[in-house]
Image (cartoon, rainbow, N blue to C red):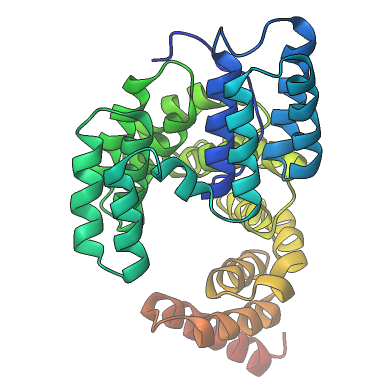
Length: 318
């Protein structure tokens, strides 16, 4: 899909970092942005710091570029963009260049979702990159994934300098249960962004749904190596459970059970204990899962099954 492979940068899929990633990658790829290898290197360093959240150091490297190229308006504008990001006004900076986006942002602030949707779709009709990305984000947030997918695909067509839409295209396919479509798109994104933990985790989820548990475990381990989060640890436990590696699943899920405390964590932890014959711990964890669940009848059935087996064991003196 992309004619030129963009530079690989690490970012998380929250709005601030995704926008910083796009802004830097677009400028890095622009042939007119800087004149020599030194400023090229400074831009790479600034980008790495910016998308990792170290904005102050990123700004220092932008200043170094400007000291060498004081008339570089692109870098000067990127510095303003970065400063706005630190103040939480990053979307406003982009929206200011498009009246429809600006009006959509105002509609969002007043809670007028219908107006926001109309303005975003009107803005996206221009075929612009940012306009389609924002429209895609809106519909994805509204769980209208087929619509979001269209806008992300349009964003991808709008530039050859950013691979970011690929990630969201993959996410939309995943949410729509189009796992065979999600896998190659996420794989393409990872080829451009080999340090992006979330992409590996997303591909691990896809592989899990496809029953490719060995590949899923490899990807989730990579995600954890890049960024150790509770969500990735839970995914690791789930994959281990589905692989039938119940002992390792227990170890993984036990580590996060006191931190995340959700029905699913206790559910798979309990089922892992059940699979290894530890009925007491199975019952204990499934009881917690039921308390936190929204009337999960299958979970209650499994709980009663284990409770009955435990009662029979006690009666038989086993």
